[in-house]
Image (cartoon, rainbow, N blue to C red; front, top):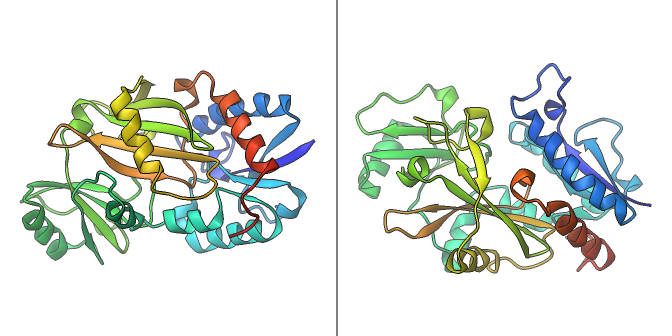
Length: 301
């Protein structure tokens, strides 16, 4: 039996005292992936990424799963991944994870021709930088995001003339500032899921009424979206900007003011895979995992 560690976080366990509101997403994801893997002789074993007794050398490969507390302790998380890279086969590869861990990777994708949302980069989210971003973007309504973050953590929507949120609710360090796009509330976001670069399914992520955040912990929900030929080609064009083995990739896109889809982010670290919107996700994932562990481009980075 091939042993694969599926890294998750203690806060994703329903009985943990600090369990997240969306812990059930971990349960849905692992339940969708494990049976198909088992049919191929692969034991996909959940492991807490920062557990003292986790030993990556005991596994044939390590998959970064629902590690949704990593942005709170990034140094420890990266140290764990470096150890996994030395002692096993890390999926996705460490080189790609390092690159994807800071949203400045969007600059690289913009240089490679990916369709982007206008963005201002700043060293801090304060009154001065936000005021300057309003002017530079020609917008009266912006979204401020941390360069290192996920799941709307310390992200804020700010309208010109309004008081800034408390510092604890803003990015703690470097940030990116983008115009608020009405389509997120009216239409939602689109998440294109690829395994070993093969398209699996697409989920439309819809925020709760009156909100713009699409995550379930803020009341968001998802539905199946069948992308058009043009939409899928655009998502593939973003993925094609990145080289190397990728067990999974989620391309998140949002319709801009010009009516065309633009990239929000490409998630190569610990994306939720939206199993409920992908009826065949188990088989597609297991095929991809089997192919990569049998014929990896390289071990390590």
